[in-house]
Amino acid sequence: MDAITTQEMMGIEERAHAMGVVRLLMMENAGAGVAHHIASKFNDKDLEEKRVLLIAGLGNNGGDAMVAARHLTHYRTDVTVLLIGRSKDIRTEEARTNWSILERMSRSIRLVEFDEHSMNSIRSMIMMDADIIVDGIFGTGIKGSIREPHSSIIDAINANKKAYKVAVDVPSGLDPDTGRYEKCVKADATITFHRVKRGLLISSDVCGKIIVWPIGIPPEAESG
Ligand SMILES: NC(=O)C1=CN([C@@H]2O[C@H](COP(=O)(O)OP(=O)(O)OC[C@H]3O[C@@H](n4cnc5c(N)ncnc54)[C@H](O)[C@@H]3O)[C@@H](O)[C@H]2O)[C@H](O)CC1
Ligand SMILES: [K+]
Image (cartoon, rainbow, N blue to C red; front, side, top):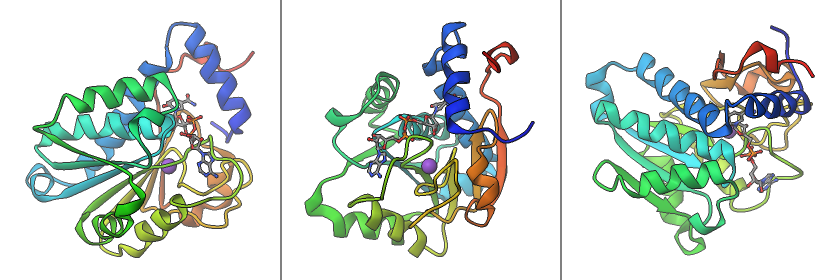
């Protein structure tokens, strides 16, 4: 299938939602796809020893990462979710639902909410501790220039030279339509949902391996 724009993706998402494949279902399938990719790259024994850091923005890209975190606990992996903000500021109902599930998983997932005072500890968590990093900061909802703390967090992700990095839907910082970026996560793999976004093909050098992952959208939702 050919590449699409974020505008087209939003239309498809709306029609799927109206057909009953609600956003929470699409988010669950998206997050499961991210966890599935990681499980396919590392064997179960490795996964038990790896420290996975999932970095979640306040939108649905972050929500996808929260779902992936929950699915990864199946492998008894050391899972930490770093929210780039306060949970009270999470923008969408689906992401809030998933965050509240994670809050009930305190034995299997560590949750960290961003707090300006701890930028140094967050930087070292990203740069030193993580063996696998999931980038759920921005997806198709990115607008305008990258501000702090996102800018420093993207730098810290790129400064970790040992971690395997998976971008959720779009490497954060990349404009999914034009492929332009000032600063962007350099991923080893990008799990993009339903159909590839045009910007990924324009700047494939920052995406790593591009994997198009189906999230249960009916073909009937494709066109208006
Ligand atoms: N399309 C689908 O069928 C599905 C998409 N999913 C995922 O949802 C994201 C898009 O989510 P959205 O909430 O629209 O936006 P994002 O999460 O990508 O980011 C918006 C988030 O970030 C803030 N923000 C935007 N620009 C900036 C900036 N320059 N600096 C700082 N902050 C910024 C904004 O305020 C929001 O908080 C898509 O990519 C998929 O991953 C579904 O989950 C699955 C189905
Ligand atoms: K992302």
